[in-house]
Length: 141
Image (cartoon, rainbow, N blue to C red; front, side):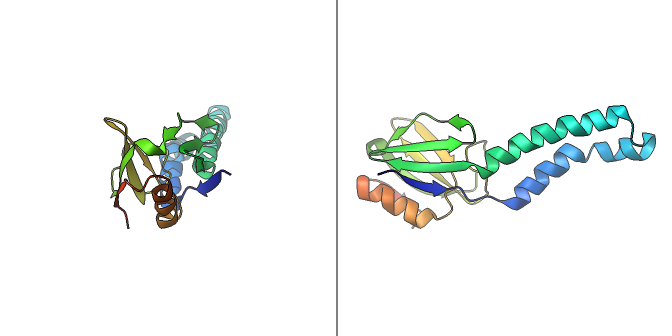
C-alpha cells in the first residue's frame, strides 16, 4: 500500500516569491496610479503566483512498493527505484528541485543521478526508505 509524505513548506520562501512578483509593481502604482495596464499586470501575476502556490502546497513524495514517486502539483517525476538509492544526505543547496523548503535532503541514486526533496518528517521518510533498501548510506539521522 502506498505511503504519502507531504513536503515541508518554507513560508518565508513563499513570501520572497510574492515580493519578487509584486514588488516591481509598487513604483509603477505610486508613479502612475491604478490603471488598466497595472490591473492587467496584477491579474497576470496573480495567475502565475497561484500556480506557484499550487506547486508549493501540493508537493508530495510517495513510497509505492519499491518505488519513490515525486509529485509537484500537476507534475509527476519519473519514479525512482528505491533499490538504486545509494545515499541520503542533508543539503543546503538552493538548486531548483521539487523541494518547497530550505530544509532539504539529497537522494543519490543510479550511477550519477540525484534529486533534492523536502519531506516534512525526514527521519520517518528515510527510515521507511531504509526498510526497503537497508544498503542506503544514511547521512540524515
